[in-house]
Image (tube, rainbow, N blue to C red; front, top):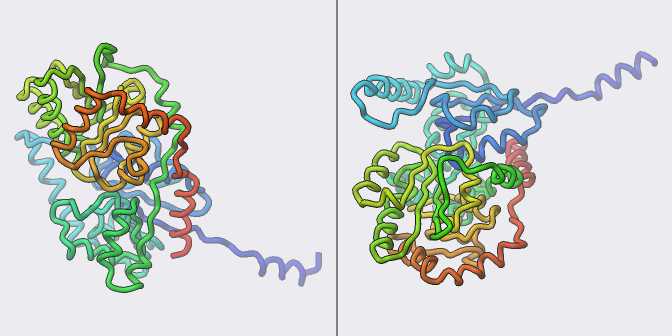
Length: 397
């Protein structure tokens, strides 16, 4: 080969630099946002990106699923402290003080834990990481946020607070309702162009495969229906409302069982409420499980009792497993359930939950229409398309 030809080929050869990305989230415990983040990461090509995943707490069921080419960093290690037991308070306080210090003086984090690394993209995987990412000392990095909740219903998020998210270069929202919230608060076309709706990347085959595993530590009773609800146990999920409705229906003579699968900082409060209501024999709190899908499969009804959501991942799972569904009217419910064609959408209140469960118990034949619709239904939300769209946003910034 002639020297000139060889030199020309070298000059025409482009070395593609991997984009350096910092992603921040609290932990990888059993929540919808954590689930979709890890699903997204598992489906990324490792030759395009160099990713550091920074956790506040090195904890959670999804940790083993993070691809090994992604570097996991953390501020604390150990389990989440959800109580105020005297011996735990010093450790809990130390964590809060340390995180607060790094938030106030971000240079300490970037020079220390992050070793002065320069990132092309800084990514808040949940809305709670807004200030940490926007407060970054890296002024040249592009900044993205992933909004998983209808913030208009989240305590403390006034219009003024929500408008602070326009400090990001891209605002990824997961439902039509959240998209409208941000579009209505945008002051110009530049801000509107920052908003992009992307359905959560979820792996249908995973749900179906895991659902075939055996049920552990619970026995379904075929003589009366079981309502299952799955989620992190904190006030947003409305498990208190669900238990009060359950008690009312039991008192009215409607035999049924309620199964709550999940853990969280409100677990002991909800467990105490269950005992105080006198429904320990008819309501079960299973706690945390690696695989909730066999319980989904064997239950008669799935019920979403949430006060607010963004785009409830759990409804995607219930639809995939062809369950009879009752859902409060939260963000994403109408999109997921095709405006009530695939499941019953009830008023977002205790009374709404009561009416929905009573209908399921007194008129179960009314739910046949939903089962028929679900038989051949295929979700319009595609894992590959969601991953591709998020990747294209990263690539274009």
